[in-house]
Length: 251
Ligand code: NAP
Image (cartoon, rainbow, N blue to C red):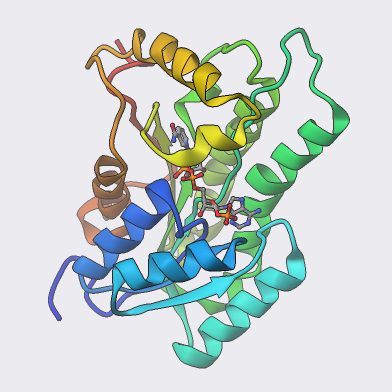
């Protein structure tokens, strides 16, 4: 099949929902074979059915090193290499402001969002093809001072930093590393923030009031941005943060 990702093998963590699922669909439409992950087996199977073809769901937690090793063991047996990694799995995280996040909250956010991204890439290195593309999902929150988001925003600032270091470390193999920083996107992630649905609604209204384009973004719009970074359309782009936030942090 022809397309921008023809014959490419992609691993997308958190590919069972929201932005990751939209990316998986876009990549398959462009000719890739995708491995998608997530902790909830039922959600993952449902997502694989929606994608419909050229997909292997692998249940697992990015905070668990054995799960990551099992994931890449399956990829190695089935396809032998990885051309694209989208390290996208993360949890949302609103904590009480005033440096009041609990140790559990802090650890949960960093374990998934930062440590999870680090080892998602580390465990893939031996399978990465020369010329591979690594896309790390960060967030525009790392540019902002949003009360209650200290651990979440810092977890994403670290991810943005990983991209700079890895872009330098992998450049001699032609491997490019970039982050994608979405603004507010309509996905289930706020359901993991600890807020009630009403509180989520109010919070999102406040956030959207600060988006120059006047609305939330759609997962499909993030998938187009990820496709740019994953494909040879961005062949001279490495180490950047592609901010797709309706102008929220840029205007
Ligand atoms: P989402 O719809 O909640 O999807 C998150 C995905 O990650 C799910 O597939 C989830 O599946 C998976 N996941 C969570 N924890 C995991 C873990 N420990 N191990 C493996 N998989 C895990 O969220 P989303 O909005 O699409 O978020 C995707 C990315 O975009 C995240 O990195 C997020 O921080 C970033 N982002 C989102 C927004 C936004 O407004 N939506 C804004 C900026 C950045 P399970 O729960 O089954 O594990």
